[in-house]
Image (cartoon, rainbow, N blue to C red):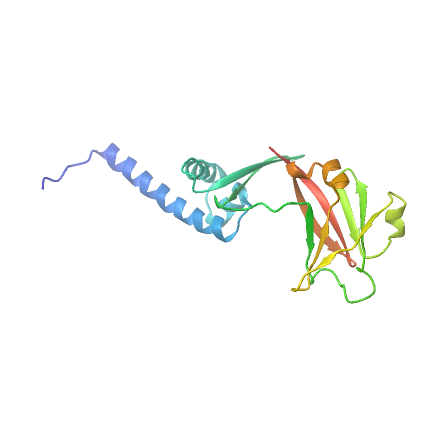
Length: 187
């Protein structure tokens, strides 16, 4: 078989393609192990410039090897990267893990759901006087799971008010309460 001699330009193109393929493989490992990392977070993990990672994510997205979601925040846009088969959970149901909430005491026999602000929803196992000043809670019985976590179903009134189908949220815990904060809108 005749060996084809490549020009320096062709060798350079081949070397760049091999580098891109190695980067793509590394990114796929990180994305599968950590769904939802931003392009910036991925760039820190693989120690490459964010623009290089953005190009790689675009390549992988075009090949349907990753799925992306762009979130609009006050400070700008954030592109999050997921495996293509990733299932986004519904925010109709909020899961409160047993490590964050103490349900063994009399509280949490009922869940008190408060509209705290245009960006925050509060969850408590009993009435919270400070929160009562802001809104009247919706009270419901939470569902207790076998693993010790608890599920609270958000009423349509709250789900629709916050337009949670199109929002990115963060759930935080403090003093046996939880606060769901809307952190951005999904584009």
